Length: 121
Image 1 (cartoon, helix red, strand yellow):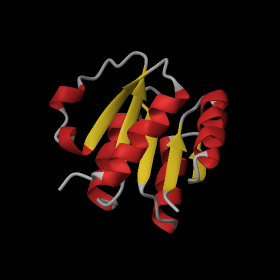
Image 2 (cartoon, one colour; image 1 turned 60 degrees about the horizontal axis):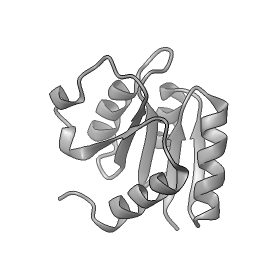
Image 3 (cartoon, one colour; image 1 turned 30 degrees about the vertical axis):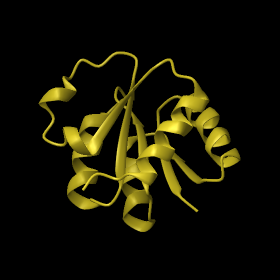
Image 4 (cartoon, one colour; image 1 turned 90 degrees about the vertical axis):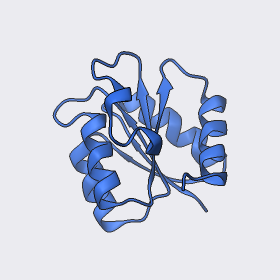
C-alpha cells in the first residue's frame, strides 16, 4: 500500500487530502510543519511527500531540499496558490512536481497515481 505524507499548516487541507487518499487506498500520515515532516521521514517510510510551499518556519522548498538529500526515494509534490520562490531555479526541479491551489482532489489522486507508476530515474 503506497504511503503518503501530507504537510500543510492548514488543518482543512491536511484533513481533505487525508480523507481523499485514504479512500483511494493509500496509507496517509500528516504533519502541520516541515520539522514534524522531517521527524516522520526519519522514523517511517513514505513513497510520496505532498507539501504546501508557504508555511511558517521552514517552507516547502526547504523541506524538499532536505527530503531529496536525506530520503531520496521519496517523490515530492509542492502545493501552492502563491509561490514567491521560483521553482525553476530549484536544483531538484526534476524530482519535484508543482500542484496549483485551488485543486480538484480527484486530480491530486491522479497525479500521485502517475508519480507512483512512473518514478523519475
